[in-house]
Image 1 (cartoon, helix red, strand yellow):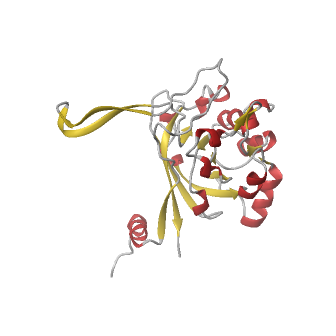
Image 2: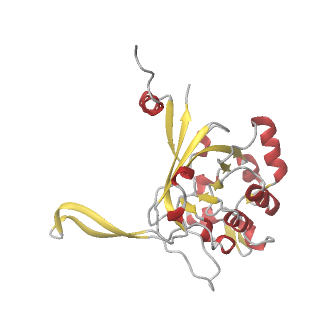
Image 3: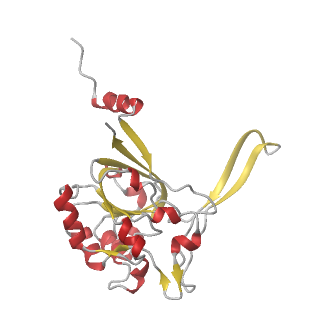
Length: 262
């Protein structure tokens, strides 16, 4: 008798055969990657920079390598609980359990609404309506917010979409942020924008409610995702790979999704 293939062998076979597709949700990381801009009285994050060490030359004849400098929260990145004051006594990015970095995802599509109104806010009723159509949010999974904002990711100006009143980008309302953090079964929120909060989040009560509620609830954030349009509403699995920076509040991450294809 032939033994049944193991689950991992079946996974490898499905990946090789194309019945499971790997979708890269990560924005390319370079000096052109947009970064958040805070009011000038606050500290600012660094843009990504490469410093060449050697490139097949006298500094190293057979090898090419670089040093790099980057903010923890630059490009597609992972927010750990200690990123916000509400989670200051909770996990740093190196302490996030590895098994929580692989989780199912629910994709909520508000592309049309964000195209009409860049300040569009998702309310609890929107999420409940999605659940009526698709079933409950995945226990221990991600809520991924698709808004079409990844189309702007090659331009700092278009991505931040700021005027004299501040940035204008879609996100969750304060009450929805509280509900996702404190009442929903998900482990975190993923977005296509520069941060998990809406552009107007600075003026909400509490300020930046996604950060305040999610981090304080020992949950996570994923930002500057791309290619969410390639994911189904339910059924995909997200693999988030931040660097395990000791005492770090977050890290640039390679974020992948596994999607079954018929």
